[in-house]
Length: 472
Image (cartoon, rainbow, N blue to C red; front, side):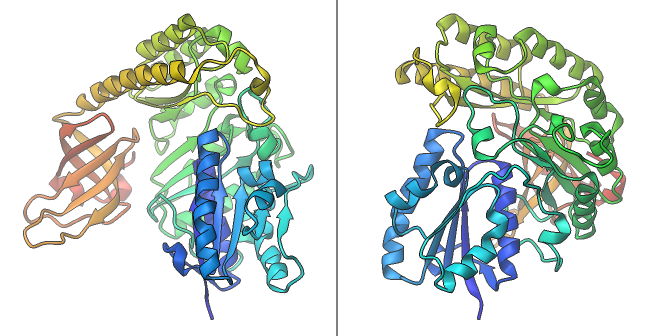
């Protein structure tokens, strides 16, 4: 008899991919996925601790699940990921109804741990060690039965994440990642290509390569042949027959090389969209953050990227209110935003994280000032994003279809959603007589509306062009 699995994922794309793997592993043990936690025999919470707010959301959800477990005493609850790695047994001390705490490098052991729990060997299980000799299991080890994706992803089936490395060696002073995910470990070159080829053979059209710092792929441990670096991996993946679009995230500016930048001009499948976190425009703050570059060096790399690929869409991250950030430091950040004019950005208020060095800095910025500065920065970013999107008005934009809807009432216009090569969300309507294109199809959309976060338009007849002849 099948058992029901529900997974709630917090945080980044790395966590989304980890959740998919957990679901694939547990499918072998007879689990099937459900969106409804009340139906589940096992609920896994895959956590993020990059910010305090994300961690508090985890504890809030665990509190809600206590009532569910009281009604269904056979329910198992597990906490995985970065909060599990960071808090360990404290989670069970605070939430005794939790059965399982599994760290970032042990979730591959989930089937064995659950079997021990069900056999009565363990009342509550803890697996946390960041093993020094840890290696990411190969794709064939995880997917030995060629199982389909089980756990729901935010991506459509025509898109997939592929993890190429785990951990980080940078130790930025605000960041908990090296303490929760360990030091950098790169997957073998051949194993990544194996996974990409199998995914494309299953119908995936767009691949996003994932890592905490993909630019340093291959530097931290032996990846045969050892001379291969991230640009070599990009070139090899781009040659995969049937792959239409290729993306990657996240990159550290200090490791961005001219060779990698040239890939945006030389690889047809590589989308002209680049997420390059700057965090601050102040050199004083960047130095305290231990970022390893200056604002001027960052701007030089932006200029070179735009010289190489003039249509590249740039995105970034900002941390507002880092300890010691003065009004002038924040003004430097706003000036950098004015100058670069990012297409989009993720921005957050600084929060102390356990073990991160900045937690011990004494010159904290007040919550009131952080909130006010964040509002100013996000307001400016929304204005700039809207300007970028308005530049698409009246133009044809190539879109990969991600989702389409069937009209619920007679006469309702069919509509779909996709994404441009520049990573813009595009909503489109069909014209009379047109057929809704399937997910994965590359279509042409005439843009007639622009907002700060998305575009809207109508499907053009050129959508019948074979998608294999169009590249994003």
